Image (cartoon, rainbow, N blue to C red; front, side, top):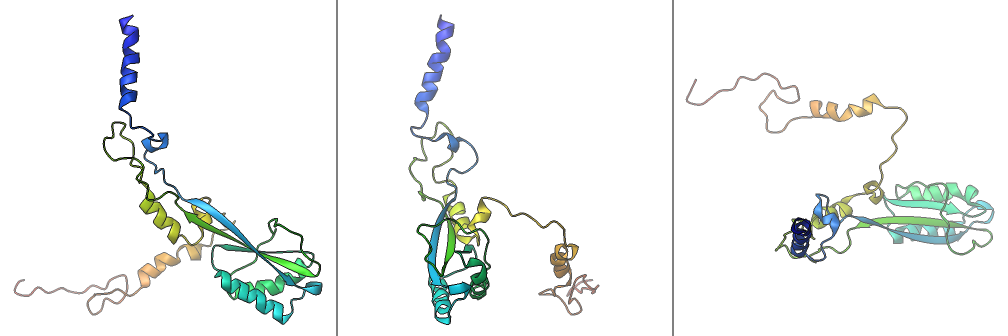
Length: 218
């Protein structure tokens, strides 16, 4: 009977030593504080009878893009009965910001008025919520779990610096064919790029053979 009770007593003692509220995920090596995506959708309806934007409507759309600070990471769509015809004009305005239109516009609230098209901008931002996170004391740490603030600094910096937050969560599909020239471009630049702080005659890689001299010795 004593042998059967001993494991239960030991388990209760270990459970009593564990830090209260410590998440199970913090017992591993991966940080609990991970980036999350926040997606915002902006819409504007512009008059496009027959699929053609008047100059005033094109200027209004351009000002709307400028006000949104349109940039890399945003997704642009065109929706409506005349979206196909107006797509070229919208794409030209978006091209001034280095952006391209995407097909299959997302569902938005409200019906699109007649003779108008709806331009949709979907914006994704990454952030690490609840950081800094000092919810758990660093000591005592009988459970030997990771600190509650682990990952806040690195992942927050990564979330702010990544150009397209979508890249944090899923990769991009590569091309069906591989361009060998593009693949070796970086290596070729490394080999041919001029060096800094070299002696005369060592302008490019591979280094030219230059005899070195030592002052006061052989």
